[in-house]
Length: 107
Image (cartoon, rainbow, N blue to C red):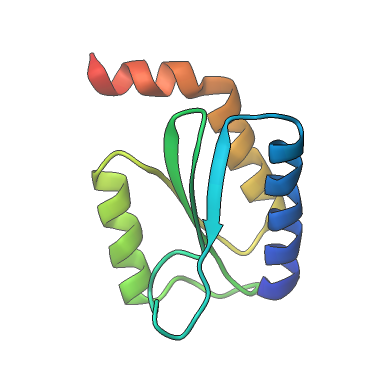
């Protein structure tokens, strides 16, 4: 699946969360001035997240890895993937475990 198609499916998934009334805010970043920034950033159930989407078989570039590492170090959940199902699982994990994730950071 191409990055463009994965992105379209992920945006639909995120929009569905909004329609369902889930506590989510997200932003799709895509322009030539934001090189290296993760494709999607947001907050879901009080958890900051960053998602880098790739074409099948591609990996994040060094600058993209740097952003993701620093976001993770700051407490965000991060994912770099070429697979839509991984995005769905990642977001569902946040949805189902947000209380535990938050508590584990402050204990």
